[in-house]
Length: 471
Image 1 (cartoon, rainbow, N blue to C red):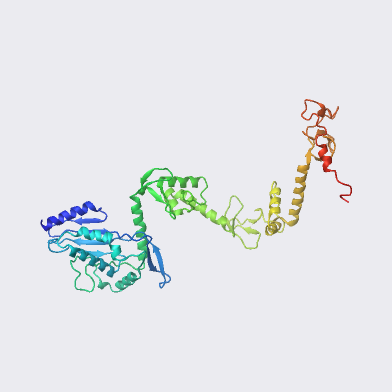
Image 2: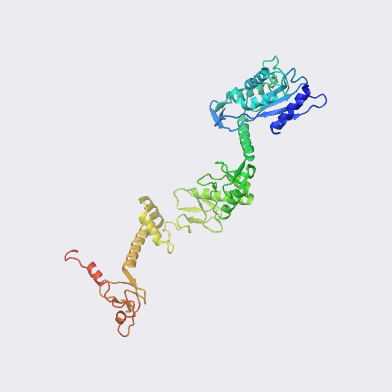
């Protein structure tokens, strides 16, 4: 079989094996030889880190976690006497490998040809770079880029040491550096960023090719229709995640949007929220985050005027503040106009809550409340509320004038000491002033029939103290 026919057959087989994203070829045109390229994706150990010098401390190394590395590029050219007499001409390049490491791979390709010369070899070379490059380079879970960075700095200082463009050779040549090696002029200061971005993009590309089931709508879709929550990488279909964010924001529950995954506490990045729900709702979410942040700051409050509501910076040690926007001076405790040394006025209906808070407060808490409301005011409030509690438990109100009445002994026919109204202590019903008020307890149709002295024995037992007990 002629060399040209073998070359054509080999290229057809390779095109059927590899995707166009990793393998490309241009056929013979006139006097131009067939040439192409192959991208070999090296499978790195998991987990995998590269060591690079710190920006602020070049003598210290920092680890950067990567899942994918840029491919090793094999550019090849098929001479007319391949494969009968010589191997393909090629050029190797890779941004994260040193010249020495690229030469190791070049020598491995030479050995592969020497093992079985004069036969088509492109597939063997591609398979070697795909599956054996990590072993040849002795990649471990931690790979230092310090030698590469030094080499790149040296090449930038002396650019004439390396060719400016890729060239194809069959043999390494007589120079100290293998002529089949091409080293890209990468800026060493941006290499770490370049590798990180590539790893992230490659991870997303592979993710887009998968089929996944959304945990919200339980629908199987391609990965390109999914969104990974930044921070935890939980996948959800883009429509479900967008609707989840929209509902939370519009319902006012978006002070901190979190990943919808059960038991996941990852807070969603505002930029990701804005990209999904649009600028209007995204800005609304950012405002809620800002408001929540300001609320958490001890030295910030808001102007109490409804038409203002601007943030106000507090001065330490002062119980008042002034709004810089509307110039309103207010008390930090009661939020009313500043009243100087006078204690804050208690609002109607909040006395009992203040009393309970004061009685259950720590010594420091009681001191703070005394500073706000005044110690004498709080003591009177406690005494008065305790009296009210006792009266509520031990007295009843007259059904006519509503005065509080305590029953100490006797029957259940009561007489109000203020208005003179007769009433029943059991059902609190007013009794007729004319006639016999006791008829209420002797009427069989009454709910208090025969209950005139009900409970009188209990009162007598409560008052049955020994003589001299209180002396």
